[in-house]
Image (cartoon, rainbow, N blue to C red; front, side, top):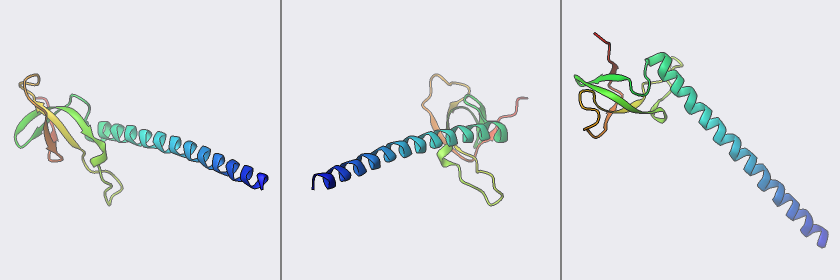
Length: 109
C-alpha cells in the first residue's frame, strides 16, 4: 500500500510540473502574439504609440492600442484595433478618449 501512495504522489507531482511548464509556454505565446499584433499595427496601419489619428473630424494623439480587439478577417488579415487617445492640441490637459476602430492615420500636411 505504501508503494501505491508513493506512485500517486509521483503522478501528482509530475502532473503539477507539466501544468506549470504548459502555463509558462502559454503565457509566453500570448506575449509573443501581442507583440506580433503590435508589429502588424505598425507596419500595416502605420500606427505606433503616440501616432496621430483622426476620428470624427478631430485629431488625437494615440496613447494606447488594444490589440485584443483585433479580429481576423476573411482575407486573412486583422481588423483595425480599438485605440485610446487625447486631443492632439492639448495632450497634457485632457482625459483619454476611447476612439474605437473608426479612426484613420493623420497624414501630415
